[in-house]
Amino acid sequence: MAILPKSLSLPQARTEIDLGARVREIRKARGWTLQDLADRAGVAVSTISKMERGEISLTYDRFMRLAQGLGLDVGELFGAAKDSFRHGSVTVTRRDERTPHDTPNYRYELIANDLAGKHMVPMVGQVKARRIEEFESYISHPGEECVYVISGRLDLHFEGRETISLGPGDSVYFDSALQHAYVEAAPEGEESHFVIVCWRPG
Image 1 (cartoon, rainbow, N blue to C red):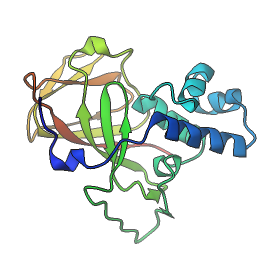
Image 2 (cartoon, helix red, strand yellow):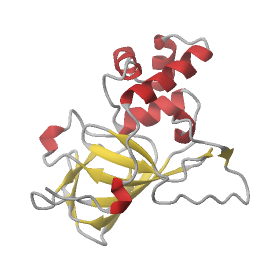
Image 3 (cartoon, rainbow, N blue to C red):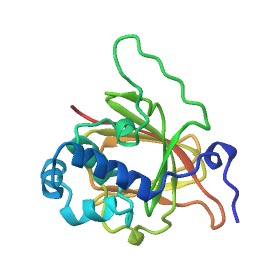
Image 4 (cartoon, rainbow, N blue to C red):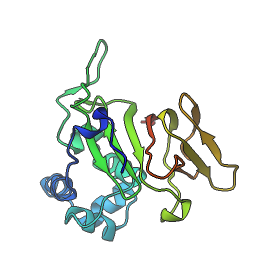
């Protein structure tokens, strides 16, 4: 059984129940129905309902659409944002301060999550899926994306394109609107870790 590096083993993942309760609280404070939020976020009513009840974790693309539908930065969705980005802003994220978010196939630890209004979403990531078949569908979202592999090996799958294999020190920059998915390619018993930065327009 592989042991996570200390940098990825310190935070405890926020539970689906906590995050779902936060979304429900924000939605109700605005007087919105589930359908209102679904229309704004482009996420199915049934998906939001299950998420609010803590029954499912959202994939990254749905999570970002939900934040944008609520008009919030990711940090605000987690209740972590304390300030808004402006000229001269500087924020430091210590390794035990990253905000974790788990999905069925990924674990993300968000960086600079105390700063709202950012155009970039930086994260440290870990892939759980070892086969592309483990994904319900490819991920796609507006913006641009850059991934840098710290350790292990990743396969970056694109729908209708050749798979890109990445090892330590390798990186790739691409249009996030492409249908894509990261798959763990390290030997069984080992885990890969990477830094990913997504730029989101608007």
